[in-house]
Length: 531
View 1 (cartoon, rainbow, N blue to C red):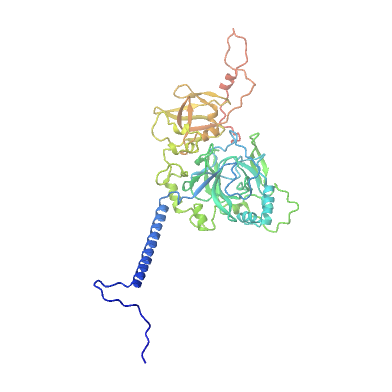
View 2: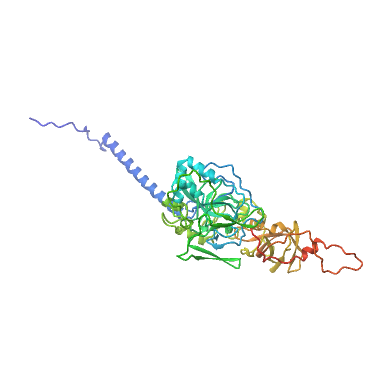
């Protein structure tokens, strides 16, 4: 019995060049295609990895975390509740926090949250009861909102009742929380002066009234390691941004002008809390300080009993700690669970002199601002008062140094600048005035300046991103090297008898307002609540 062999592939007769069977040809082409596809995929992965590595090490937009700017009336980034019918009034001249308040720290100013006059009281644009009612009706937002403070949703009205409505008197750096994907997502944010917030008994901002977003202390990273995102507003300057000191820091004031930061003692008692605690606020109408009892802003009658302890201000006043590596990177931190800044953020701040670049503005390849200011100054980027930043000192082509401010008060009393390689100091009148006033200068030249340009708000807006204040003297802008604040003396209708002898031929006449003005005493040492 013969064996059965299944039919094999067809055979072909011998040919001079050897015939190639059609079936093996198809297999070879398919194998070649697969090999080429694999090679292309590998090369694509390698190329993508190289691009990512290059981008991350270029310090460009890809790797720099953002620090947002949120104006007082902005609805906020993905707010927890719809924008309420609230309006925030712009700050009047003299109400903005003095540029000398606080201690320099990582490119900003750090202040104690209980500093008298740090916040304005009186009528604020805030509705904490409305926020509590909104969260009670939206369980998803309520759960995420409460998670920021480590409380239950039932404790929300009780926690809100421990807070106090105030108005920021300075652009303030905080950790803001947006409602994204059903969670509270942290991001670094600067709130404009004039923004209504709720603060705790330690003076730490906890809620932004305009949108209901939770707030917390900023990340513990230098500001120069971030990239500014958002439009600049009038008076915005990086070196005037403030943040509230952490509970491990003491801010000490020396001679009312100099402040230093020290680590607080390990056994330092927590700030006072409860109904007996007070905050010293500034009244925007009278411009006088007054004490405000913290909390007591919500009617808790009808609420179920509180069955959990509320967090203390001290326990919450700590640098941001992100819960994921992604959130840590977005906030400039090294890793999840660690408040330390990312090494590349610290390195970038050191390289650019702690001056953060602005998104979309002209920058060097390293992402740092032009150290000489020029077109990259804050005034130019914001489209605001650019004349001061575009004008140079009449005496020097070198980049001017940061203006040194001393003293206290609501207006500049004297300032020094360089004219034709000569140092000139000009003294302004100490009495309140409107329009142009004459200056007394050491070089004997006659100069005048608009009195309004010496006020705190004008000085702030005319100071560029490098900290140089420029003032216009008769149409010529000069870079000021040093300036001293003073408190203006109100002009009164009462006149005093001048001691200047009068001619016997001239009858007695009341002294003029100009004579009263010239004899007004220097009062730069008086302490009047400064904005």
